Image 1 (cartoon, rainbow, N blue to C red):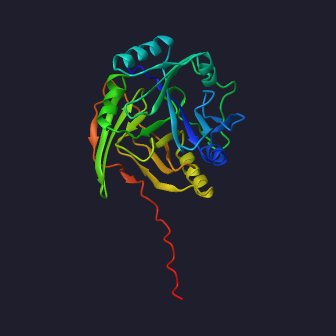
Image 2 (cartoon, helix red, strand yellow; image 1 turned 120 degrees about the horizontal axis):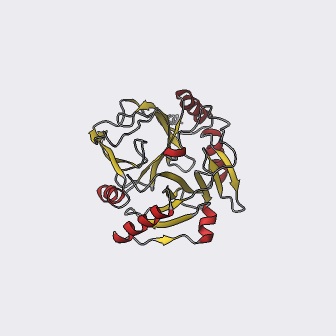
Amino acid sequence: MSLIQQLGFLEFEVTDLDAWEGFMTKVLGTELVDKAADGTMRFRMDGHLYRFVVTPGPRDDLRTMGWQVESAQKLDECVARLEKAGVEVTRGDADACAARGVLGMIAFRDPGRIPVEIFYGPSRGREPFKSDYVGSHFVADELGLGHLVISTRNRDESRDFYIEVLGFKLSDHIVCEIGTYQVDIAFLHTNPRHHSLAMGGPMPKRVHHFMLQVGSIDDVGLAYDRARDHGVVIEQELGRHPNDRMFSFYAQTPSGTQFEFGHGGRIIDDATWEPTTYHAISEWGHRRPPRKRPKPETPA
């Protein structure tokens, strides 16, 4: 069993806070929990007090990814494994834990230099979560926020770090070509969700996309309509993946990174699961929509 229970939260550093507030609430359907004096916002989507933190800054990219463990003992085990692997670990003091709303936490950087936090004892919302836009529910709670696809300096090094040091398990690989681009992605799981973390080679930003899963196919269609209605750039239209079986679409966040919104992701039973390699990103769909070409200028 993985030391890590689930993907706990994501923190993004962004230049346009207003755009992110509208995007998180009116497109994704999460709930704004609070907004600090500096503009930092937290958003909720299930029983956890928050799953997303959006903070002001120039990066327009992932700032931190947070992974949840079940106890102080598991956190200490993570520290021991990380330090044995030569990773510099910082323990969160009382102020840092209070700011995160957790009982205990550590921070470090993974082999790709992405900031990572591991924590236990997250705060919970006082009332059951209900979205103003998602009629079913977000598939989160015990399975975590969703999944994240990160950039790596060396895909194999990062994959092996998460498996050998933190106990993630390999789900599968996708190796194929899209045009002239060579795709080689590793998918890892920490619980029955098919994958909570995936990684390819170097990319322009720390994160390619994050995924949110909902409880009905209709909520995917409604989110697709909301994205278009709000002028969100659609990167890949509706389609289905061969490995996790997710029916989904991809579009841009206000920072130019991507999100996936989907339904029907595969559940893994480690007692019978055998990793394999797929040779296509999608079974069908997920096509890039046609882009409008600028009209040629009329000669004078």
